[in-house]
Structures are given as structure tokens and as C-alpha cells.
Length: 196
Image 1: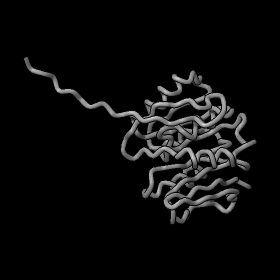
Image 2: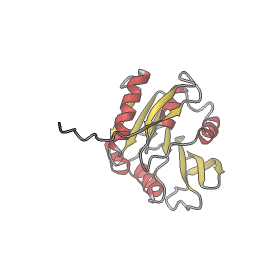
Image 3: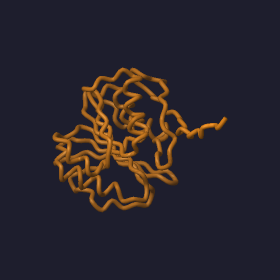
Image 4: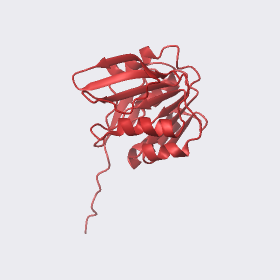
């Protein structure tokens, strides 16, 4: 009797929601090459920076990956999150996790595809935007240009950027004021507010 070939399914890791209505909840995430969830320590620092800024905001998670930033924002009272993810398996896991948490379609949507190109499909500015792309591809500058070109920011919009240490952001508009920043041995991350 001939035995069928078993296809190896992608393995799952997990992320933990730190605070809010789903505090302590673990969500399965795809363990795939190129997906780099924000560490709990970095996430905790970011959301400490955002205390008082999260309630009822609209969020864009541009390179969602595990969805750790977007789900944390929802847990802490954000009105809605738009997740963007090119990796098909990761995008499907985001959809699965929305269902797992009982998140409605008005609270969260998942856009599968190239985040830079898909910006043109969005038609309104956001209150809070997360830019945490794969490293060493120049995607931060391209993201900034896409957000400005497609008018997805407005006065008061907060933008979180995480990138490899030592990178100079060439496209950073003068109206984006850095209000918080931190560096580790490998990563730099900062929070900006659009002032004009």
C-alpha cells in the first residue's frame, strides 16, 4: 500500500496581549521567515508612550505580521484597526485571530497585499499608524511617502516607526515631530506627531 506524502504545515508561535480587555490573552501567530513580532518590552514602552491617546482612535497597522500592535491597540480601547499584510498565511492568521477574539468587521479589517501599494485603496486619514516593516528593504521611507501621497495622515496623527538601528530616514516630513524615541543594540523606535 502506497503511503501519501505529508505536507508540513507552517508552525505556530504565539504573542501575548499585555493590557486592556484581553490582558494576558495569547494569540497563535505564524512562525514564518521575515515575520518579526515586536517584543513585549518594546510593545510595553510604546503603549506607555500612548497612554491617554488610544481610546476610540482609528489605527493602521501597515506591516501587521502577527498583529501584536493592532490587537494591543484594540484591547486598550481603539475604535478600529486596519491590518495590512502581504504574507498570505500571516494575513489569514490575522483574520482567524479577529474571529477568535470576537472582533466585529467594523472594528478590524485585514487587507492582503503589498502595504505600500494598498495605501491607495484607503480613503481617509488615521489617528494612529504603526510602521514596523521587514528590515533592510528601505520600506520605512516608502511607507512615509505612501502615507503622505495618499493623504492618510492629518494634523495630530501619531506615527510609530520601528527600524534597524543606524538607518537614516530620508523621507521624514518636517511636520512630523518626534515626541519619544528609544534605541536598543539592534533596533531604533520612535513616536511622531503630525503638527501641520
